[in-house]
Image 1 (tube, one colour):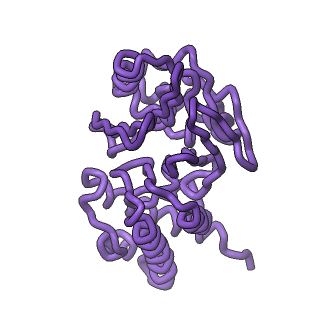
Image 2: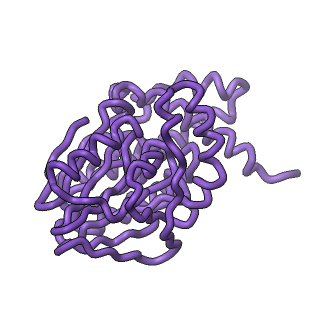
Amino acid sequence: MLRERISENVYWFQSETYAQVSAGVIAGPKWAVVVDTLMPQETLRMREYIENKLNLSVRYVINTHHHADHCWGNCFFPGATIIAHERCRQMLVDRAPSALEVARQDDPLYKQLNIVPPQITFQDGIFRLRVGKKNLQLFASPGHSDDGISVLVEEDRILFTGDAFMPVPFIVEGDLEQYIATEQSFVELGLENIIQGHGEIILRGEIEDKVKENITYLKAIQKAVKTARRRRNPIEILDSIGVEACGKSRILLGGLAGELHRRNLRSLYYKSLEEEPED
């Protein structure tokens, strides 16, 4: 697990187990807030750092969305209150128990887990939280999923985006147009850093270019699907379009970029068929 102090009392953690997933800690004088929990294999190591190195307990855990690599570690913070979007709670309650049963068949670690849904939720507007001298703003940032939220550390202009920002945008459970709108809105926040849901920290001078790169990619896959639909063998056509042809490197996210890209194209294609008007 990688770790870095981004600014005073704000820390970044990155998984070495799965897809460079990230998490954050905002430390106050008496307690800390955790933003996402990493993969469960690494959650306890992050908690150990907070308790033993920072000498703090965790009072709140914020889930940016319902996916396992961001919130299945909730159960390792038994004294904390979980905060998320209302849709995140609904999805964890509805979907996570069956997914956990499947995971338990493959990895004994998951037998130690139980799903802990958020106790505090919100839907619209800004949810505010104060941690020592730091003021946090939590707000909806859909696109990757409709329960996505981001967390802004006001004083430092650091934004934890969850998967609303990734080296390769992933929209299988989301919406392409929402993703574009969400990323464009980040440019206007005057940020010093973006902490992506996966991948490296984005610095102030890189933010606008990274947003443009992601939007270019999303528009490229949208165009690819429209072109493929006019052909007799659309799936074969889509599978032949590599991620680099759409402006992204195949080595991103430890080599997972190509698979995410393939799933994006197929998802967009099948969604386009569902949206076709009936005769």
